Image (cartoon, rainbow, N blue to C red; front, side):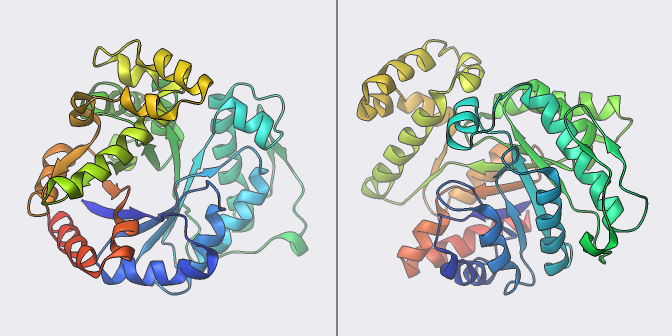
Length: 344
């Protein structure tokens, strides 16, 4: 099983150093999220310095960019990494699309993402010279690519496309047309086994594909430390993050599966009042046992393996990079964790 790490949102000039550190510590891959910083620029900086590290977006927001724009950027990154670039895409929610990116109207995000992925494939085939550009989908259409505007063929044209999702529809679509699925950080083992994996298998069956061709990349809330003081700060960070995610109606089923049906409504009420402390307080220790992995340093690798080995293909720590950058001792501890997980 691959063991990756997610960038903590470092400035662009620090992205290359982060990649070197991740590679030196034995991680399999480095994922760049798109929050306050763009995901693609971090990938570009990392791609030039870490030759043994997979580099990916986790995730880049799709709809504010034309598939042609995304295809061009991903093509260059695939070329620069020698085929180690993993394109992770997400829809984002309605409010951010319409009010932060001015993507209006925000409708049918699942079918639109499916069309987006198919458009990327068609554009890449045209870049590679395999066929003329002639894509006419439900949401996108492309039929103009003069030679001057084509980047031309590369040695690694099969860019893996991962999509992020929470519900069955998106997981089924990933099984049908994608190379991978980004599990949402807010998940449980039961939700993976009973919702996500069966939906991916269903989509793969519809397309006549082997479900194992669709790789699952899964972020882990790892609460690790040998003392109560070490773990207490991480517990609060995880509670805050779960509360943030759980306040979105789309993620309600992850609570409902475990009998916490009303939690999303309470979180939204606190959020409307701006009471973020009350939001975090709604996430109980019982919930942490379901949605996070907690152990001492000697046991965290086994705890992650016990939950995820054979269930997903890649796991990545949500907070590891921030910890190792703050402490050389933590860096060496994460090195051992990465070694043990990858060895499994």
